[in-house]
Image 1 (cartoon, helix red, strand yellow):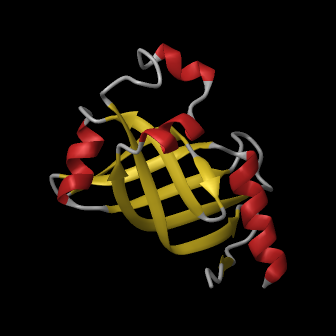
Image 2 (cartoon, one colour):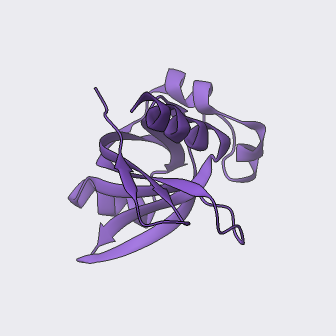
Length: 139
């Protein structure tokens, strides 16, 4: 099991862009996001005025896909289902900040920046070559 756990963590660390799926008016909605991780806990910066934040305030369940490169049929990817909490912790915003975010926000002190923290309930390692799904032990 340790091999699968390590493999899943390597995929998460290598592939920081993925999809975040939420529920909006009873239907799933996915958006590309940039994720930062501490183990299997994911973080992403976003604007608090977005629809995804409204969705998560009503239903904190989310689903994230990370991995799988387009066109490569023999890749593994990671599925994370979890609960999202929202914080405006400035120290965490500064820790997660990267220069490209200046394209979206006025700076680290922009009052509209929030952090979404995805605490995983389940993590699965999947492969495109076979149908096997490996559940990752989070303990």
